[in-house]
Image (cartoon, rainbow, N blue to C red):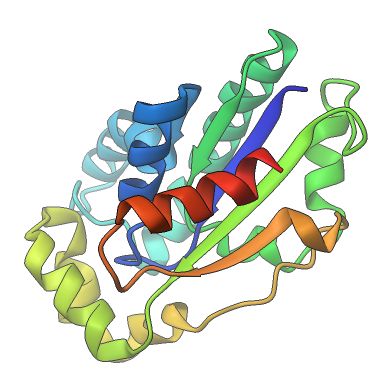
Length: 194
């Protein structure tokens, strides 16, 4: 059965690193929202006279955020139509709270949770300090706003409940503070392939 695998969670939690490790070993279409949106976001932000590296300000959220999710999910749905696995990476902060969101996305291609294997890995870290250090160490221009506006940004790091209507066995909250050892990779594979 085709799989729709989400690696979601806050910035710095390591969701992209986890997803890359999965795809290297098991294959599938690697669909990182940041990568897919970047050219459009940079153009929109530049045309608006904003920082093209900004991914967190209210202006970005208003003018680019939803476009990124649409692009990413359209690419994922296209993979599912081709009976291919889609591995989707992004925070999905707003979408997590909408119980009907996942069903609505699948319905766009005439699919449902009965004919697509859904797996959601919510990567998180144990403390705000660990997030801040990971984000700082990445050294990405995309993180400057986060670090400069930490008091405003830090609320996005709270672990959230996924409300999508799916089997509880489809969701794994994954403490990603430890390196991805062979044993941990086997644990992740046992969850995704179950």
